[in-house]
Image (cartoon, rainbow, N blue to C red; front, top):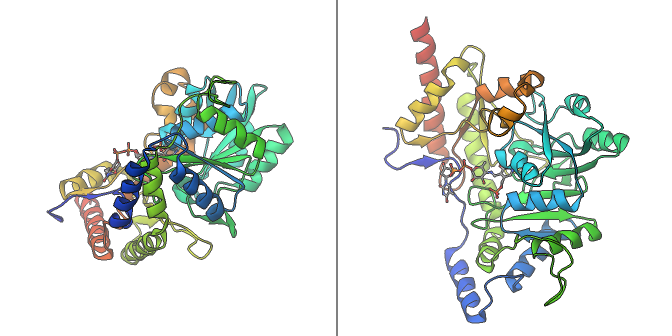
Amino acid sequence: MLFDNPIYVGRPNVGDRAEFEALVDRIFESGWLSNSGPLVVELEARLADFLGVRNCVAMCNGTVALEIAARALGLTGEVIVPSYTFIATAHALYWQGLTPVFADIAKETHNLDPESVRQAITSETSGIVGVHLWGRAAPVDELQQIASEHGLRLMFDASHAFGNRHRGQMIGTFGEAEVFSFHATKFFNTFEGGAVVTDNDELAESVRLMRNFGFVDFDEVVYPGTNGKMPEVSAAMGLVNLDSIENVVERNRENHDAYRDVFAAETLVDLLLFDQRSGSNCQYVVIELAAGAVEYRDRLVADLHAENVWARRYFWPGCHRMEPYRTLFPESGERLPNTVDVAERVVVLPTGTAVTPDDCRLIGEFVVSRLRDYCAERG
Ligand code: T4K
């Protein structure tokens, strides 16, 4: 076996434990555990400052943040989203009574293909939710252009893109609102958590209201809101982890470079690259198998698991092939050839602070040697 202990995709990056424990002591001493306590307020201010946005509203998780953002934007009817994303992007809309309409991605970027978005627009369409998949920016300008032409609302699921830039501009500042996930598996985590960020003060006020049952005062409720609040212990984790993100990026880059060196001369594997100069958290190590090797994708993943390397097939098979969308829209795959193709090719490999560049070299070499073996067996 390659490793005695499991090597996971999504192992949490955790900052200074002593600092975190000191903050937890403070929480107990204050007797303030939730409901916009001082640490949540401090985290929101630091995140808004870091991202360069006017408003950051912290949430209990990214999924509820997506639901609240969609609702605050007043989305109705159909909303265009990629199928090639984590299921929460689609489910958040569906839970709000909206119909996610899946558009295709571009093969090279794995992000929404603007032409496919245009084709998905109907008289019922009210908005577009772009996703910055793997942390690489969605085609923000093209989507903004389409939204403006058709009078659609535009927001982004930036769950993978915390701290990333697009052409020098911080992700978090595009569209009318952007949503982050701070789940344990994310580059920056608060155990569970998320945020809606926006420069629109009015929108931010609606989001805050919706996060806390619609309360505007002790006894006055003006809206049927939900409970989207982040607890203080999550904010404590966030404040500590925010101090260590440079170390996490550094390790992710070293790991990514180690994989890149192994895969550089290998024609059976393509490693997705990030624009490191413009700013990327390098949170995901994504390989695509070439045409000659794609039939071995699942065998490769099973062999990696047998070696204690818990590689993933994110985001196979695509939201449109999961329930309820598979049953509701059985024909949608016909409009999504690139989604179907990419979903069959991708393997996500471990990175993060729990993994070393040497681990990555070992995993990369194993991938290459297995793929060559399978192809040799085939003859
Ligand atoms: N939009 C996008 C584009 C997203 O990617 C996500 C979340 C969301 C929206 C929704 O945000 P949240 O509501 O979750 O804040 C995981 C995460 O649970 C999910 O948050 C994340 N995307 C998705 C990409 O990955 P699963 O189903 O793969 O989780 P699971 O339990 O298989 O864990 C993944 C790996 O992480 C495993 O290899 C084990 C490791 N792990 C996990 C946890 C929780 C650890 O080592 N320690 C841990 O504490 O979804």
